[in-house]
Length: 97
Image 1 (cartoon, rainbow, N blue to C red):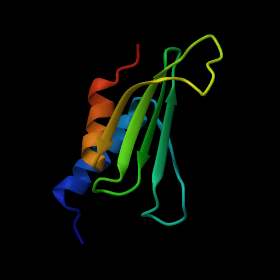
Image 2 (image 1 turned 30 degrees about the vertical axis):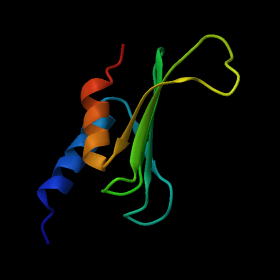
Image 3 (image 1 turned 90 degrees about the vertical axis):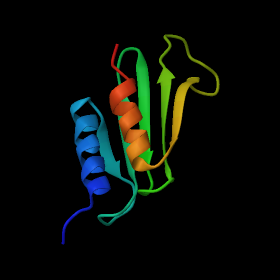
Image 4 (image 1 turned 180 degrees about the vertical axis):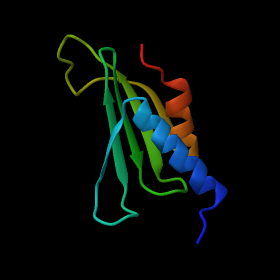
């Protein structure tokens, strides 16, 4: 069985996200369970949720503060959509500063 071009592209983007510092964990057992990715730097806290290949994915970028912010860190950027859209945006546009 061969993987389609979209799946191959998503797997490459997932590898690129790992190379960019994201760590991923599977949220439910099984090879098709949703993934959650996290990356924390001095300036940012980035999170990716990949719930499926279609439109069940999102990512958020929050600027880190030295102060405690009630309600958590404010969201600076957000992207929703399919796995390819979310991974491409995070890998291409969300650089580490």
